[in-house]
Figure 1 (cartoon, rainbow, N blue to C red):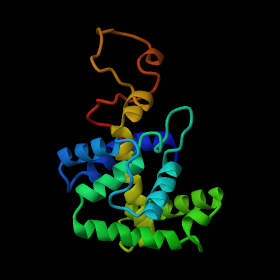
Figure 2 (tube, helix red, strand yellow; figure 1 turned 45 degrees about the vertical axis):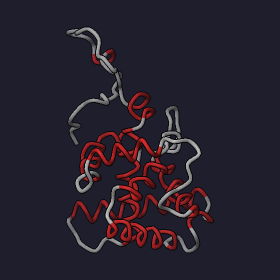
Figure 3 (cartoon, rainbow, N blue to C red; figure 1 turned 180 degrees about the vertical axis):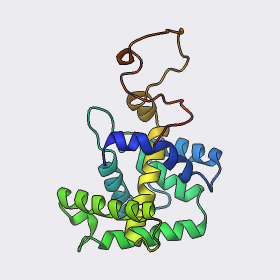
Length: 198
């Protein structure tokens, strides 16, 4: 799982994450999550810490901001508080509880390398079964996949995600024809592109 993979998959995953709830509600959840010093509204503090740890593994801080810098854990909390149905909330909490036990002891008690290995293994399990269209994904693997979708959605809706990872121009400038590819975005996708090819 690397940042290039996230960028390639972002469009499809974002669409999947917002199929049920309205887009307006997603924007409201993002806005509410940006209030500094807000305690979790849906998750317990322990659950919120676990979600934050997984989101940080998925999009860590490198030379650009990571999921924690963008307020992704707060966004996920707000999505479940204000957007998802009771059945979806219960499904996620059940998957979260299964994930917390999947490493042999509580996730937050594992070493960093063990945490990353567990998330990577479960992500591989979930994506392999999804590609093969096989049923029976474990709840813990579903938790990783659901958290990945919401992490990506929250990150790429955030100011750091849009302006520091993707290209962004609030008002695009003049038209420049026939420029070398190296000068046309430095390999970054535009934050306002409507479709990313997989």
